[in-house]
Image (cartoon, rainbow, N blue to C red; front, side):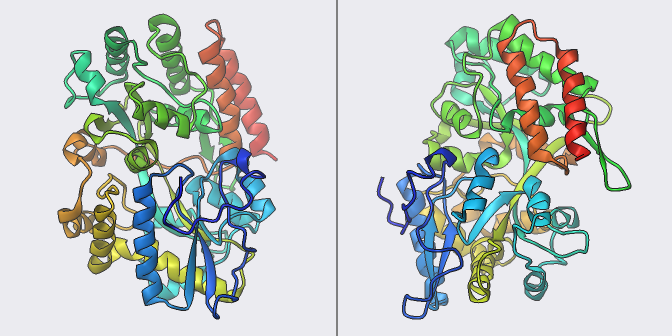
Length: 456
């Protein structure tokens, strides 16, 4: 696909295994273009539709008109836990890119993110950010290493068309895990499709198992006051989550044949109409439509069922960051871009309207359910600013938007997050591929192995 945005494609062969197309200009910018700073910025994952690039090209023109000394170079980009370190070490990342909250602490401690404390303070964002979210990009001394730009809560995504074929009400998604199992069985029996599916590889299996644990009142990791952490994987909630997967797969035969799905492939399968329900971040609708061709008419979103004594909803999000290799002039340009592209639309009505109008004119999603990185009041006010341009079928998401505020948000584990997720991938895969898997033994071993990681 040829995109109208200027996406650099050099290095595709070398980086095919890491799933990202990268720019060929050297890290740190290039002043050879009539004295302009060339700023390489992350755009979309490979495969995004043409309309996404049309919208980006329009935004690029708007920015460059306001900042004629900066030349924006779009770079296709997709974060993947197991391969991100390869890109970072190889210097193939854009000057501006995004990383999940869960990786920010490790990256900043390793000196792999640019300190932007002075810039955040000068722009006046520090006092406006949700302090819990801002803490995720601070080091022990309070220095700030990124701009939180988007947050989400876990949601239950479902196919309204498959619901109807199974005789289920598409406006009434399941609200308990028992109902999820019942609905999955009905969908599979009526359609032959997977009634429910779950991610299982590339760290996403551990991510979703952690989400299911939290939803059932458990935690996989507990922070100690001395800064250390204790692995608590071997708990009743995690066991119940694994037993749930076992029963769907081996007793009900409603899980489906694919047990090796990750974030990208489960979205692809869902958009193709092959999955009835799955859990993922509430923000995934945008990618489903933009990158995977989802028909909005079949989409529904509800809250993840919660149960147990201390249930919650796992949240997350990402931050806009700057490569630590750029020079001062490129850093200044990068902060200007982040402020304009990511941040202003969260706080300023005029910026929000321009952004929404530009996206809507290119048929890009406007109004996808998110959690506020600032205040709930400002987030809800911003929805009124952009109401004329909202094109997301929010009436098909009311089971989420009406109920998510009643659930307790829980952050992802803070230490060795991706390493523990990778460890838990194996546990999930074992349960899905071995009918006789010993869940108790798997959890006991996983807890021991995770604690070893935390003690390193």
